[in-house]
Amino acid sequence: MIFLGVIFIVFIALDVIMLVSLSRPGDERNQIIVWKASTFTLLGTAGAKMLDIIENLVRSQPMTANPFIELEVAAIIYFAALMYYRRKHGG
Image 1 (cartoon, rainbow, N blue to C red):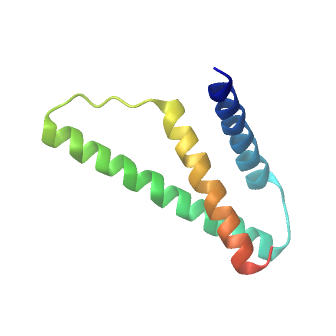
Image 2: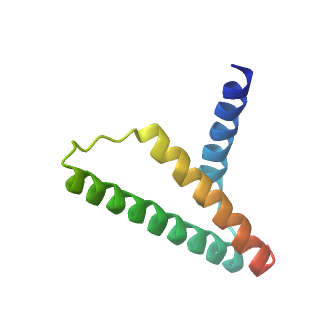
């Protein structure tokens, strides 16, 4: 239970980091970093959703998705992309 509680707190922190970095104004370099990380996150989540739809159509299963899991995967992808582009562009 402690492990799951820690994971839940980490996910909440990632969500907050994502919202703060998207809403915080900054200089042009910071805006480019956030723009690239956001683009990568959108492509990753849209690609995963398309694969999920294709898999459900091939298997003839109903399309069910857990929005909490999708939100956390998007937060993880965004955080990883944000760290990558900050390191790449010197942020």
